[in-house]
Image 1 (cartoon, rainbow, N blue to C red):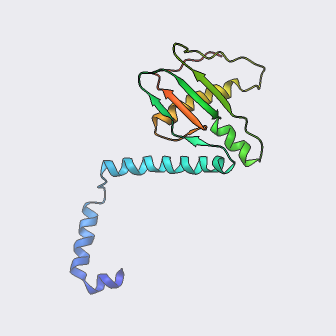
Image 2: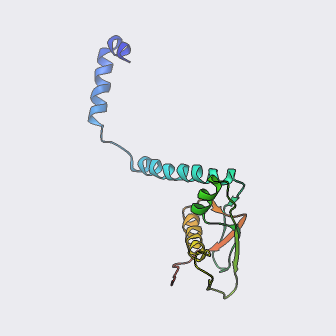
Length: 151
Protein backbone atom coordinates (compact mmCIF):
# COMPACT_ATOMS: atom_id res chain seq x y z
CA UNK A 1 0.00 0.00 0.00
CA UNK A 2 2.92 2.33 0.70
CA UNK A 3 4.09 1.91 -2.90
CA UNK A 4 0.64 2.91 -4.23
CA UNK A 5 0.63 5.93 -1.87
CA UNK A 6 3.98 7.08 -3.29
CA UNK A 7 2.69 6.70 -6.86
CA UNK A 8 -0.50 8.66 -6.13
CA UNK A 9 0.31 10.99 -3.20
CA UNK A 10 -2.59 13.42 -3.71
CA UNK A 11 -5.25 10.67 -3.85
CA UNK A 12 -3.61 8.87 -0.94
CA UNK A 13 -3.66 12.06 1.13
CA UNK A 14 -7.35 12.67 0.35
CA UNK A 15 -8.17 9.07 1.25
CA UNK A 16 -6.30 9.39 4.56
CA UNK A 17 -8.18 12.62 5.35
CA UNK A 18 -11.53 10.98 4.55
CA UNK A 19 -10.74 7.98 6.77
CA UNK A 20 -9.62 10.21 9.64
CA UNK A 21 -12.78 12.37 9.41
CA UNK A 22 -15.03 9.28 9.44
CA UNK A 23 -13.12 7.06 11.84
CA UNK A 24 -16.08 6.88 14.26
CA UNK A 25 -18.68 6.22 11.58
CA UNK A 26 -20.39 2.87 11.94
CA UNK A 27 -23.87 2.29 10.65
CA UNK A 28 -26.09 0.99 13.47
CA UNK A 29 -27.57 -1.69 11.23
CA UNK A 30 -24.11 -3.01 10.39
CA UNK A 31 -22.94 -3.05 14.01
CA UNK A 32 -26.15 -4.76 15.17
CA UNK A 33 -25.86 -7.34 12.39
CA UNK A 34 -22.20 -7.95 13.28
CA UNK A 35 -22.98 -8.48 16.97
CA UNK A 36 -25.97 -10.75 16.28
CA UNK A 37 -24.08 -12.80 13.69
CA UNK A 38 -21.31 -13.41 16.22
CA UNK A 39 -23.94 -14.92 18.54
CA UNK A 40 -25.54 -17.09 15.84
CA UNK A 41 -22.23 -18.34 14.49
CA UNK A 42 -21.03 -19.16 18.02
CA UNK A 43 -24.30 -20.98 18.74
CA UNK A 44 -24.04 -23.02 15.53
CA UNK A 45 -20.45 -23.95 16.38
CA UNK A 46 -21.51 -24.93 19.91
CA UNK A 47 -24.35 -27.17 18.75
CA UNK A 48 -22.15 -28.58 15.98
CA UNK A 49 -20.29 -30.55 18.67
CA UNK A 50 -23.62 -31.98 19.86
CA UNK A 51 -24.79 -32.78 16.32
CA UNK A 52 -21.56 -34.65 15.63
CA UNK A 53 -22.45 -36.72 18.71
CA UNK A 54 -25.59 -37.88 16.88
CA UNK A 55 -28.21 -35.64 18.47
CA UNK A 56 -30.71 -33.68 16.40
CA UNK A 57 -31.81 -30.06 16.28
CA UNK A 58 -34.86 -28.62 14.52
CA UNK A 59 -36.65 -25.35 13.91
CA UNK A 60 -39.87 -25.60 15.91
CA UNK A 61 -43.33 -24.95 14.59
CA UNK A 62 -44.68 -21.83 16.29
CA UNK A 63 -48.35 -21.88 17.22
CA UNK A 64 -50.22 -18.58 17.46
CA UNK A 65 -53.71 -19.75 18.40
CA UNK A 66 -53.34 -23.43 19.25
CA UNK A 67 -51.69 -23.56 22.68
CA UNK A 68 -50.10 -26.99 22.30
CA UNK A 69 -46.48 -27.43 23.29
CA UNK A 70 -44.47 -30.48 22.34
CA UNK A 71 -40.93 -31.61 21.78
CA UNK A 72 -39.60 -35.04 20.90
CA UNK A 73 -36.13 -36.33 21.72
CA UNK A 74 -35.13 -33.04 23.31
CA UNK A 75 -32.31 -32.46 25.78
CA UNK A 76 -30.50 -29.74 27.71
CA UNK A 77 -27.78 -28.39 25.40
CA UNK A 78 -25.29 -27.56 28.16
CA UNK A 79 -25.49 -31.05 29.68
CA UNK A 80 -25.46 -32.66 26.22
CA UNK A 81 -22.39 -30.65 25.18
CA UNK A 82 -20.54 -31.86 28.29
CA UNK A 83 -21.64 -35.50 27.86
CA UNK A 84 -20.92 -35.70 24.11
CA UNK A 85 -17.39 -34.42 24.67
CA UNK A 86 -16.90 -37.29 27.16
CA UNK A 87 -18.50 -39.85 24.81
CA UNK A 88 -21.22 -40.39 27.42
CA UNK A 89 -24.86 -41.13 26.65
CA UNK A 90 -27.42 -38.33 26.48
CA UNK A 91 -30.93 -39.45 27.49
CA UNK A 92 -33.51 -37.39 25.56
CA UNK A 93 -36.97 -36.39 26.80
CA UNK A 94 -40.36 -36.13 25.10
CA UNK A 95 -43.13 -33.87 26.39
CA UNK A 96 -46.53 -32.76 25.19
CA UNK A 97 -49.12 -30.34 26.55
CA UNK A 98 -52.36 -30.05 24.62
CA UNK A 99 -55.70 -28.27 24.79
CA UNK A 100 -56.14 -26.79 28.29
CA UNK A 101 -53.08 -28.46 29.84
CA UNK A 102 -50.74 -25.75 31.14
CA UNK A 103 -48.73 -27.28 33.99
CA UNK A 104 -45.91 -29.76 34.36
CA UNK A 105 -45.47 -31.29 37.80
CA UNK A 106 -42.04 -32.83 37.94
CA UNK A 107 -41.14 -35.12 40.82
CA UNK A 108 -38.29 -37.47 41.54
CA UNK A 109 -35.16 -38.04 43.57
CA UNK A 110 -32.34 -35.55 43.98
CA UNK A 111 -30.05 -35.50 40.93
CA UNK A 112 -32.91 -36.97 38.87
CA UNK A 113 -33.13 -34.24 36.22
CA UNK A 114 -35.89 -31.95 37.51
CA UNK A 115 -33.84 -28.75 37.32
CA UNK A 116 -32.30 -29.84 34.03
CA UNK A 117 -35.81 -30.22 32.58
CA UNK A 118 -36.79 -26.76 33.83
CA UNK A 119 -33.68 -25.26 32.20
CA UNK A 120 -34.43 -27.16 29.00
CA UNK A 121 -37.99 -25.83 28.88
CA UNK A 122 -36.82 -22.23 29.31
CA UNK A 123 -34.04 -22.61 26.72
CA UNK A 124 -36.47 -24.06 24.16
CA UNK A 125 -38.60 -20.93 24.40
CA UNK A 126 -35.66 -18.52 24.47
CA UNK A 127 -33.89 -20.11 21.51
CA UNK A 128 -37.14 -20.21 19.54
CA UNK A 129 -37.66 -16.47 20.12
CA UNK A 130 -34.13 -15.87 18.79
CA UNK A 131 -34.81 -17.91 15.63
CA UNK A 132 -32.32 -20.63 16.56
CA UNK A 133 -32.65 -24.36 16.03
CA UNK A 134 -33.70 -26.11 19.24
CA UNK A 135 -32.60 -29.47 20.61
CA UNK A 136 -34.85 -32.29 19.48
CA UNK A 137 -36.14 -34.23 16.51
CA UNK A 138 -39.39 -32.24 16.29
CA UNK A 139 -40.91 -29.40 18.29
CA UNK A 140 -43.91 -27.12 18.35
CA UNK A 141 -44.31 -24.23 20.76
CA UNK A 142 -46.91 -21.70 21.73
CA UNK A 143 -44.75 -18.83 22.93
CA UNK A 144 -45.90 -17.89 26.39
CA UNK A 145 -45.68 -14.51 28.05
CA UNK A 146 -44.16 -16.09 31.16
CA UNK A 147 -42.84 -19.30 32.68
CA UNK A 148 -43.32 -19.71 36.42
CA UNK A 149 -41.44 -22.20 38.58
CA UNK A 150 -41.35 -23.22 42.21
CA UNK A 151 -38.65 -25.43 43.69
